Length: 271
Length: 224
Image (cartoon, each protein chain N blue to C red):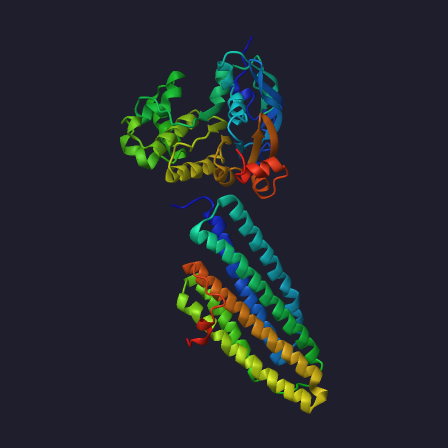
């Protein structure tokens, strides 16, 4: 049986060119369990294409769990199961014909703490391509420059591409991880508190970058920083105790939240 | 370092300046209509007041959005707050221009009470105060802002002088009462325009120095 190609699901239900799919990622009545412990409760939300969607909520609310379900990272944990479905471009990510590895290639991920490989800056960026057997120097050079430019890091590192990634500052390392995540041209970028280990200047650079990257990628970001959600996102989802409490355009969530729990959280009165 | 939302502040600033230009134009045209008895020009000024109302709402919307989403502090915070207050003052300036025009239309139907001497002088000072206050927004010129504040007294004095003069007309020639009252209210409107210019100048001092000089009478008494 032929396995589905990743591009089979990407943009599968995209509307006419020039418009973006308002429901590119669809979370449909999705529940998730660690063993008997139900941590996500019948979540339903549509995530628009090429916009930034922020997940906010107190620790343990399930925002990171949902994020990690979007590329099936949670499959790696024993004893987990889900109910409901998640689709990308109209196609279920749980489709048995879909390779999980192929799915993850289309969905890049950036973590809380920068995690460069113990290799040169160059090799970090091209790592996934080398794993895929793509070793042509001109192609790799082009990918390195494009990705580092995309991550707003090129000008700072172009003269030391073959030096260790560990020589970079924390903010530069995080942008290198973003360059690595976009090197393979994913459609979606998941970011799990990408700035929580960074100082305000580095945070500001990554936020600028997020604003630039949304022209090309659909971005979902988990953040504890309310101001960051307000600054960078187009839509915000507030989670509490595994439930989606409110999901709306970011200015509405921060200006006129409909739910008192959302208002209490964004005002800093709990959580 | 430039931030992706810096353009929002640039838009905010340019909208406020645009509003200032429209307000100055409205006052200038209202005074022109009064001095020439041009009821049609007065009607045009009345119709154009909507532009200021719309700009006030737009500036408020931009300010609230910026405070909501961008978390401004320091100079930016002062800019957004001062911008909202100044736009309210400019909208009131537009209302006073409209009041002048409504009275101008009524006055135009009657013979002139007297040659206008003090009213154009008052209006000239008020318009210059408004222009100077707005220039402080562009150039952050504290001295100029303080000069606007001090100049307010000149307009107040001219208004009182006109009040006395027009009262005499009403007492001596009761037939002039209606026209004299219209002119009194016009004088009061010009005096209010100068007050709004003063408010804006005070707001600009706060924007530039974070110094609140409102209600500081010693400033107004000292000569520029």
